[in-house]
Length: 150
Image 1 (tube, rainbow, N blue to C red):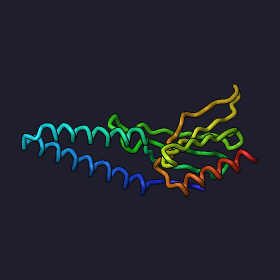
Image 2: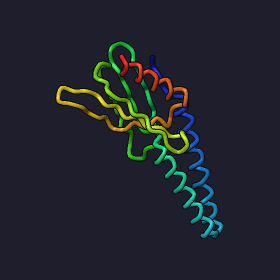
Image 3: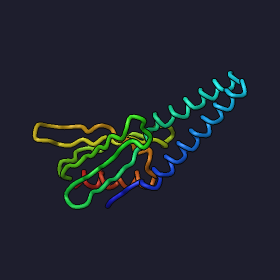
Image 4: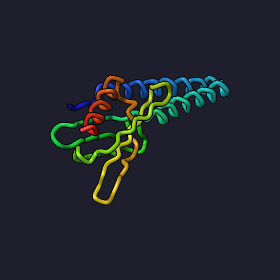
């Protein structure tokens, strides 16, 4: 099974940049019209807008459990420091735990994978699943839980 969120990520990026441009143009217009206090309030709105996307941590996700490996590729959708492409690959038999943590009324979800290595137990960094639909999150959870049970 392969799951990708390419379309949703594209929508998220478009919405973020379109609204950011509209807010920036509004702030610029307010400064030019000498409404400094309103312009500063607009800067606060933009800061909250950016902070929301930073906290939500929307990521492009590609999950595959085909063959004998689990592959999870991901990168941040909104990043001003450049894209850091990440990939997690390991044989299915090494998976020990898949920890799903929901927050913000189930809108945001994080995944932590725990595997058995030759030296002991290793925990991968947390991957945000906020960019996936709830159905895709559930499919990944069912897939990982079935692998753990086998």
